[in-house]
Length: 187
Image (cartoon, rainbow, N blue to C red; front, side):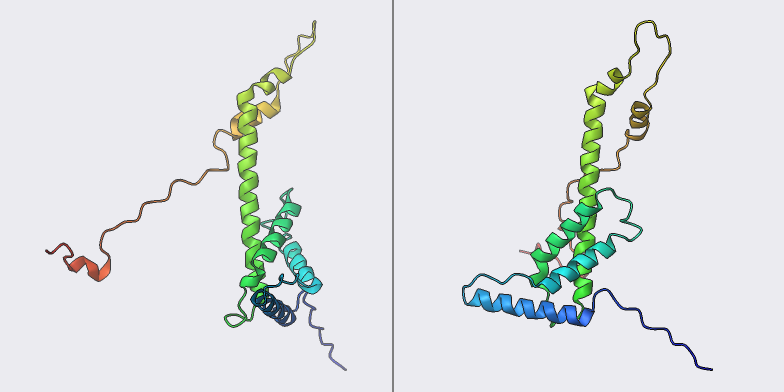
């Protein structure tokens, strides 16, 4: 009786080939810049790999349910193309992880932007008074209508999901560590 061996799953991006392609591209860019020429475009293979990584990352549970997933993917690809020349193959042989991190943080930035825009829209709707006038009745109709959207906004948007960042704290100039024991104010 022969044993069946499971075939290794084929990865959607081969990290070794991808890293080699990015290293080759970065060398070509450095050479072109040194000669004063226009840097070459990213190869189709690199672009395809970046697209696959962004698309696959967008299917993870923390990103899948957003209606603006396509914008997230586009932002991730744009950021990758912007920062791909910063990859240093001497420091790391994992271009896949480098690109994935760029895309991940691009996704987070897009989510923050969308939350901010939603908070602005909801605040504008609540302040405009349009919704309170939207439900009206015709003459002779004594039925009381309620606007559940207005109730939803009033109940759920008192405390918006988006909270702008506060001001950065000023640097504390107190001595730290061994510096505490030295008197620097001696004359």
